[in-house]
Length: 258
Image (cartoon, rainbow, N blue to C red; front, side, top):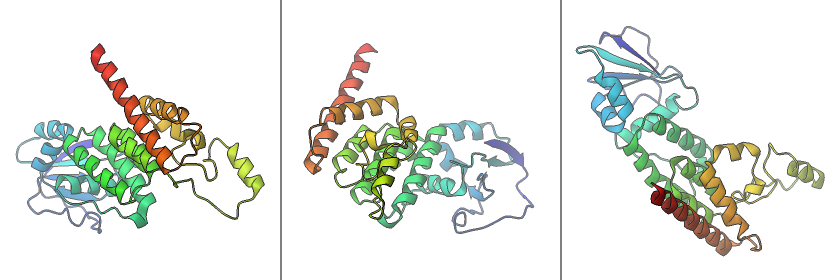
């Protein structure tokens, strides 16, 4: 992010879309510019209350001048992520629906990265609560919820995602041939056809790099102890319970050493 000081009157052609239209406050004292160039005119007290990083940046500001903060990360500082952050900051509901599940996943995962980068603890707490609801409403798949939960360090969300995993397999294509299935099983850059979405043996290699070591180890251990199960709904509940037990034991051990 780049911080610039400009006069309050900024004579620059501005693009107003459905994304940034709700955040064009006339009494705003901060302008956020997303990586794709959209401007959000907001209030510094909201940003300061939400993020220690923004609070520190804005406290350095020069009196009687308007703060212009420019984002540069095209992944997590795009306008569609910035507006989600502002919706949390301003107490608005994030409308994630079952019909847009895949879109929800990517947006939510990038939003978590944004919140962690700017140490936005209160919005992150709000998002944690929301993700539990989205999982229950199937607005997030179990795999998406586990991936996001691991990113947020939310053991309860990950355990619940495992308990809900029965019947959630990687996309099936009934027209796929046996030869294509075999080839896919040897392609480490792809998921295993029709494999359970939270069985690590069906993941593509990139997923292993995204999951924190502690969460991955606990998941592998929980799955190992249930290898003889047929992975019915009750079996995934047991895997989720075992995962939570392992994570609690690990955290208790870390506390005792501290």
